[in-house]
Amino acid sequence: MSYPFLSEFDIIFAGGGSTACVVAGRLAACDPSLRILILEGGQHTLNKAAHVQPYQYFTHLAPTCTTMTFNIGNPSPHLNGRAPIVQCAHCVGGGSSVNFMNYTRSPASDFDDWGVDGWESKNLIPLMKKLETYEVQADRLTHGYDGPIKVSSGGCKMSISEDFIRVGTKYHKRPFSDDSEDLETCNSYSPWFKYINGTTGTRSDAAHCYVYNQAHNPNLQIWAGKRVKRVIFEDKRAVGVEFTNDPVSCPDADQSSSTVRALKLVVISGGAFGSPAILERSGIGAEAVLKQCGIEQRVHLPGVGENYRDHISAFVPYFVGDEFVTMDRLWRGEESVIQEHLARWKSHRKSLIAQNGNDAKIKWRPDDEELKVMGSTFEPRWKEFFQDRPEKAVAIWTLFSGFLLSSDFPPRNYMTAEMIALYPVSVGSVHVKLGANGKEDIDFTTGYLDDPSDIVPLNFGYKKLREICRRMPSYRGEVAAFHPHFPEGSTAVCGEATGPVDLDAPDIIYTAEDDEAIEKFHRGNIQTSWHSLGTCAMKSRTDQGVVDARLNVYGVTNLKVADLSIVPKNVGTNTYSTALIIGEKAAMIIAEDLGIEYRL
Image (cartoon, rainbow, N blue to C red; front, side):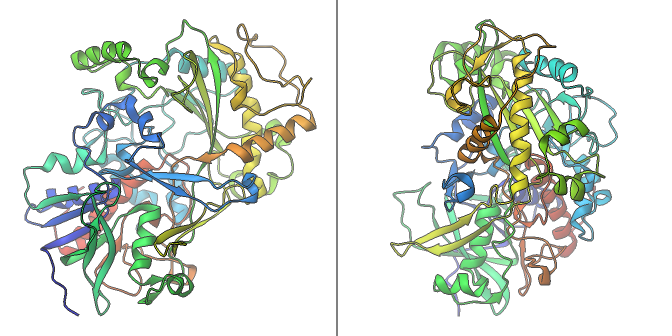
């Protein structure tokens, strides 16, 4: 069958997220004559305040925001019957344009655990260094100092985060580290650095750092507002894509399809949700899924859409004294405060405009005493995965200087504690399906808390984090509506306070009923960490893999997947760093395939 192709390029990227920007930008820089097209369903982010001003990341969580897609999961009995919602980016730059900008990196062993030839940590560390300019400390062996992505401490330090470290090290009896992102350090309190350019005070995202800065190259094109429907094949060779105007980005535009030819390669880069959907709409996937949607199967690849993984989070807010600086007034949109900080930011690129309110963390591992308290449910998981791997954190604990859950709350000062559970056992899936109206829908199972061990670190972490917060100078009590509802008369009942308790004050004693309240709270409130991955896994085909070590989709030619969907096992990090590494590695692989010189 012949197609009326609109135009032709050498390489087409189906999706314009973080990884796609890295790959396209690197290849364009290596060979400016290479004709590259990025098709992105969302809109451009170039120099838009909501994307370049760090403090505005909060706005992308709004339910009405069009820079995110809200994927609704299937109701789960393990979540008190809730249908969880998982947002993913819908704009040029993907997650790098809307995320919290938290700079974390996996322990090196995570990549070795993948067991994929060429993707071992020894091969990836040079790429980690190549992509970053680490502005925080000099002469660190595993950090880079000449890359496009800038890492800094942001516009100013928040005293609440400094107190979190001070109290955490003393009360929680953990050491301090000035660099817990050296690929091995764990279980110490540390500053939390950010993907923020310390010189310009702007977000350090893949769109601006890899592709927008190559506007002088007419061969590198980004067509925003274009949703890729499927890959076009001639026999088993990918030769182009079919796309439409995106209904969210271009609601009034013609929705008829267009096609564009790829002379050398199609790269699917739609993320953990978009990439399996494009493959399934192209006839690549499990027979039952395709048959339900009336799609003719081209390649039997049952791993497509399986192996969905994420990190689960719990957020709990506390009241803060009026004398402490928080992000609340900016996040509430108080115009006079915003203008005051904008003036400083424009003058010398400092102030809360260049902040995310999140300056401290611990990559936490339980000690022997804590493991006893956590009980027998977590013990097998600890022994099987964590016990002999001291670089693997069970969770990240952190504190935001502000009310992260809503901007529509009584105008006071707040701080929000967060627990991010790393390496959960539970696994989900993402597939296309036909909805009741005959239109395409999503069949999404998160898997959250399906395994009983996954909730244990959250239940324990709530108690320990609460004890740390109670001892901080800024503490003025709990925002009870967003904490567990403890039985009347319990010593754990939440409410306002006049100030902190002493550092050596006794811990709150929780009864069995209190523990039930904490577990019920978490099942009713835990949510995504926006770290979705794994649905086009880089594994052997017999092990439900979708791509091989060179990112080729099994069963076809001239088609690769490059994004977080290829990650075969979970990683102990905020996943932007992983998306960047995949981009750098994919660029190297494609350059080798095309015979283009690529230098580290």
